[in-house]
Amino acid sequence: MRKYEVMYIIRPDLEQEAVQATVEKFQNIINNGGEITKHDLMGKRRLAYEINKFRDGHYVLVHFNANNDVVSELDRVMKISDEIIRYMIVKDVA
Image (tube, rainbow, N blue to C red; front, side, top):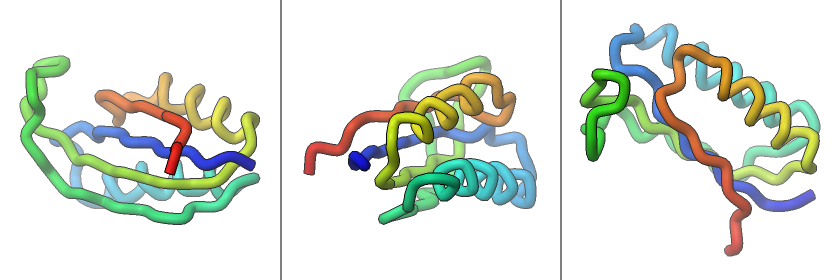
């Protein structure tokens, strides 16, 4: 298993329950074959530039260990989720 880091931005117009449900959905995907080492819900912050007419977003940062299948599934689900504005999955070098 390799170390990965994912940061994603959830739409700001969602209610807190929907934000929590989205976070739990992605946690379950990672925990199904991997393990989360650090999870940080950074809260609502201003975006550097406007994305899809949104100026704010709920930032989430997750460090995890997983194999390639888990990362592929996480990438696939994040691409098709309407709740996600942007995301990035990278290998963690530290």
